[in-house]
Image 1: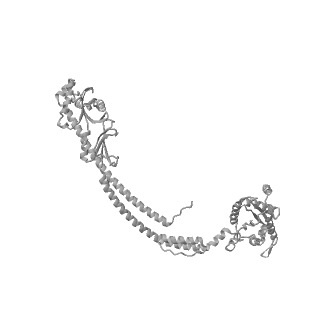
Image 2: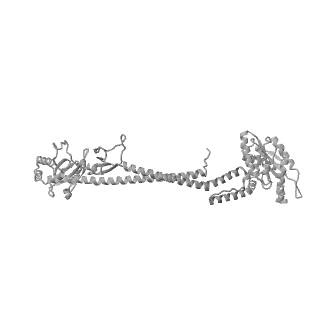
Image 3: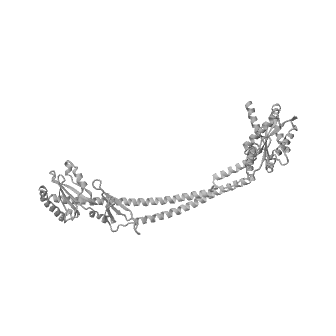
Length: 543
């Protein structure tokens, strides 16, 4: 897949759009946060009101229950009945206290009155025609907690919510007889109807249920649910704990947040529209400024760079741009750079691909071309020959006459080779004039007195041998250098592709072995075979 390279216009436009989007998102988040904080504050205030009102109402239940108990305990007949264990009279007194309670306990919904002895033995309780209850309503956890008390703690009144069966009641346990403890009176009431004034106090629908939500004691007729077209309103919850580990009451108030939410929503829309318009105007102004002072000048530089890549004659031509100080400095540096490149272009190319002494292709260029031949011919099933040549008696020339004479001799060798090869063979020089003529054959200097020739037009051993004989014959003619007549020969190692190898490194290694064999045995040239490799190894081991 082609890689994606965005333009600076796209990047800057995307950046500005992103910043604008971030600004809008921040405005939206700020509005949402403000809305949520407002709703949370209202909910916290409402929850505190529920707590205060619930505590006040439960306190009223507790006071009323204590007043009812005190009313009973203040009757001499009640104490006398306990002392004489007159259970029938006790029961009648309990019933009368419910039928004719004191004024402070008139609002209580009494569900049971029970009397226990000092050792918590059951004596009497309110049942029958008053409550029509078949099962006594007793808070077992409260009785167990009272049994565990000792000393003066047994004289204290115990009260709290208590779960009896599936219902939750308010139970008050009062000692009978003061310091002369003779028993206990338990007043059990239903607190639900006492908590209903929360509805009138807050003006909101109320629901009362157990904390585990398994038992619902009361639901306001105006309580909204998520069923149908009605949406569930925010609910404020407050828990009233019970005695021990039992479930208490959960008071839920449904908040009417519709009007406040609508007002906050309208405010948020206005803020978002203002932020969007402001952000859009700022984005357009910023984009226009950046485009005028940065993008257009950079585009001019980019177009000039593309022209340089496609046309070398554009190198050195200055480009004029206007923009910010940094852009103009960049353009000035660009112009200076192209001016220097114009002078360095030929020098760098010359150094990279040619031999400085003979102006022939160097080893790097030979390797590149040889690798190209092996890869291309492997696909096309073509053949070619490779010569590796070493001058004979060149070391004596260097040692006796000096390196400057040796260098001139190498230059003459580089000039003579083109006249030796057949008309179809080309000696390549990497310069503008000859590069266009170079297509296939190549003569290169590898270093020292070593040369190499690639001959695609002489792929067979017989054809390669004809070219090798021509080269050897041409080198029999002396070289005239500074009044010196120099006789040097040449040893040639010949390999063929693909018979002797299918990659560059194998061909070069085997051509070097063949050249060494030809030089050692003074054969002039030699085709590679495996025996030469064996002899070379034996010679190196013997040496």
